[in-house]
Structures are given as structure tokens and as C-alpha cells.
Length: 422
Ligand code: UD1
Image (cartoon, protein in one colour):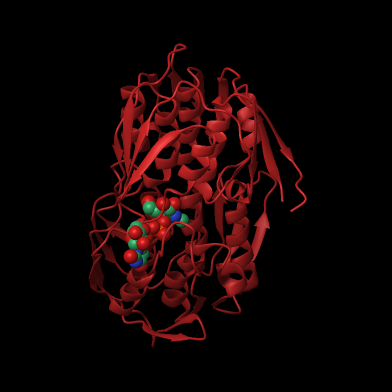
């Protein structure tokens, strides 16, 4: 198993390009199942999760071509089998995103139930109830969700009793081909949901209220192919900005969308960063200062993202003063805290809140990644720790950060990938 070896303490200063958003690319790849025509996707990040989703499409019989310009052309017209097998779903929960498109387009879906997950129980009940509301018949057999529809799905009003990102995406993808007008209430407003909706509209879907908590979808009989460029990854961008903030450094991000990052940029300014944005770039400059501690509470968009929580815990760990991080979306998302303790951080967990007293310096220690964003936080901590930190189980990082060591090297870090023995 590969590990990352990081020598802390280098000044962070440089320019990097932000990749396409994983969490937009995944539902958009699933959306290609809604048409028999080829869909061309651009700016897909090179990540293990994307490869897994493509593998899932291929194992159903979908044709995937990589063009010379690195865009990917996907043709679901060749689909042979509506099954998402356990072997792939267990490696990536987001495989559940094929449920809505398969059911809506082919009247059939067999999707393995995702197994346990490091960051809480993460059920899929809202997805299933959404399919039922649209007229799908759902049974559970041998660990699989079996969904069937007699003819077209029927439009419905569906209220999410909890905001769910992939739940909204699944119901939206099913509703675009349903017969009649569906209203999706308390829907997620994340930029990735918006990007999916824009792709669906480019495929011929009729959706009003994109970016709001109520989407009105007029079902159409057929969708067609399109050409779509995936939006930039706001979580990747935020992670590199925190690298600048904790090191007193300067980070220039290109190909980024600052409009999707307000809640994170507000907190970075509050911690003392100077931030200058254009339509597609961000420059963060700490002018050599140590950050000041900030309090954050995670909540659905446009509030502070849970996927940036662990990174801000590290920011508070080296900041001046005491900050709190309250997690309201997931249970059990503080797995990184134990590892940060080993690097000298002063954190106390109280229920769903961590109280972090900033220390002047962290020190290197061997640490282990537990989930995607927790792993990123350990890499950040290692960048400013005294000594050489070895981060184990980095396959989590590879699920969500394209070329992390190359990008951090461009920012001035000393980081290398070492092959582990297991
Ligand atoms: C997505 C993101 C993930 C992010 C999360 C919250 C993708 C691929 N992943 O995950 O990176 O951290 O949004 O912004 O886009 N819930 C239920 N029943 C359901 C579905 C969800 O109770 O059927 C609960 C979850 O356990 C959680 C909350 O709803 O407590 C929100 O989860 P949700 O928005 O669905 O997260 P994901 O879509 O899985």
C-alpha cells in the first residue's frame, strides 16, 4: 500500500490548477445512462472514484471512449445489464447514483446495497423512497435493491425530510424522464447538484428552480446526447487554500469557481488571509502571519461544507487561540482527531463538536488515513509539522485528490509517494 512521506516546514508559495469536481462528475457519469445517444464529458478528474464509476458503466455494457483531447465519450445505447454489482458498489457508495437513471430509462435496476462506511451509517432510505414516490416498485433481495417500473415512471411531489446531495441527484435524474410534472422539495442546492442539472438540461430535460430548494421537473419522453464540462472542485480548492493559510504562505489557484466557495472564503478571511478573486482564480496570501482560530458549523450548501471540516480542524490546531468545529451532517466524522493528537494537536471532542486549542507547532508522527477528507487533513498537518511524517493508507486520498503530491510540490512542499509493503 502506498504511503506519502512529507517533510514539514517548507514555505508554501505557488500556483496550481484545480481539477474537475469529483462529486459533480460522479452523478453526471450516471446521467449518461438516461440517453441512448453519446454524451461527451470534459474536465473529468483522474481519480479512483471516477475510474470506478466508468468501470461500473462498462460492466453494464456501456461504451466508453477516451478522445485525444482527454474528453470522454459515453454511449449507453449499448447497455446490456442493469446491474451494479457488490464488488464495485462496496468500493464506492456513490454507485447508488445509477439507481434513478437505470430505473427511469430502462425500467429496471439492480443495485447492491452499499456496505458500512467510515463516516457513519449513511443509509439510502431517501433514495429508495424517492424512487417509490415516482412509481418504482422496490424490493430487497440478497443484498440488492431491485427496482422495476411498468412503463414510464409517474411524476410526483417528493419532500426530502433531510437534505441529501446524492438523494436529490437520484430523484432528479429519475424525474426528468417521468410522465408529468414532479416537484422536488427541500432539495440539496450544492453546486454539484446544479452542475448535474445543467448537464441534464443540455440533454433536453426541463427543470425549473435549479440552485434552489424546490425544483420543478417536467418529464420528457427522451433525452439526447450533449457536451458538458464539469465544474471545478471547490473542496480540492479549499484544501489547498488551507495549506496556504496554515503555513503563513501564498497560494494561487487557477480554473476554480470562487462563487461556489463563499462560506469557506469567509472563514479564511476571518483567520487573517488576504484573498483576491476573479471569475476563475483565487489568490490567498497570509503575508507570513500565523492564522487566527475560527469557529465553524457544517451544514448543507450554502453553509460550511462537511467535506472541509477536517481541514479547518488542522487550521485551528496551529492557529492563535481556540476554535470549535461542529459537525451536523455526519456522525463519526472525527476519525482524524486521534491521529492529530499524535502530532501534538490539542483537541477535545464534546458530542458533535471539537474544541481545538492552537499550538505553535505540530510534530511529525506516523499517521493513518481513515477517510478521504480526514486523510487530506493529515497531509495538511504534515506540511507544517516539524520532521518527516509518513501518511499510511493513502488510497483514500487518491479517491478524491488528483496528483496531490505533484500539486503540493508545485506549491513548494517536500512530499513523495513511497511504495509500502502492505
Ligand atoms: C455527498 C457527497 C459527500 C458529502 C455529502 C454531504 C457525493 C458523491 N458525496 O454524500 O462528499 O460529504 O454529500 O455534503 O456527492 N441520509 C439519510 N438517508 C439517505 C441519504 C442520506 O439519512 O437516504 C443522511 C446521511 O446519513 C447524512 C445526511 O443525510 O447524515 C446527508 O447525506 P448526503 O447529503 O446524502 O450525503 P451523500 O450524498 O452520501
